Length: 198
Image 1 (cartoon, rainbow, N blue to C red):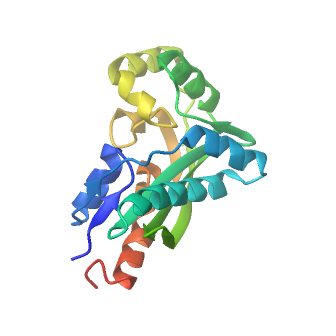
Image 2: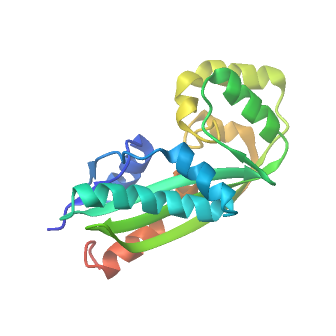
Image 3: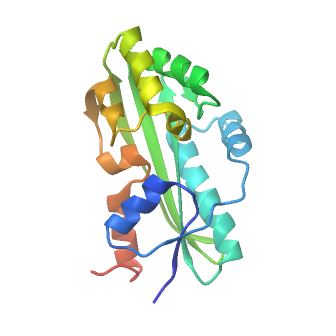
């Protein structure tokens, strides 16, 4: 049986894979994501291409250390028009990000890749259009107080599977893409490779 490794410490991505019936080990990739993200942006890559490239970089890094395994790498980018967002460093930064997104439509891009022995076997990217409602400052303050530091693990400062859903008025895109990984294309690739049941 092929060993599957997720090149991440993301609880949401691990749960998604396990709930789909996959046994997966977690081994975070030792790469400087922010530096790579910025380098790719300077090359002129768009946010969707950056998400895909980050997923590939994570998968490659871990697959070199575990060449016998099939490694899943995934990452997300968030863009509001030409402005790209990063994970907030603190709750004040999270508040500023949510104020910038309030009442507007942003795009969330999730990239995923499979690698074995330092070679990419598959990669894909999917996107979702996310429209936040014009929530009040009081709602925002209560949301930040309730959700707290867990928001710092999300580039969008929201957790759609929890109370973050209340920030939105419209969402166009796949639920799994929003949670951090385009799961259906990934499962199809695993079936094609003979790793998941057909």
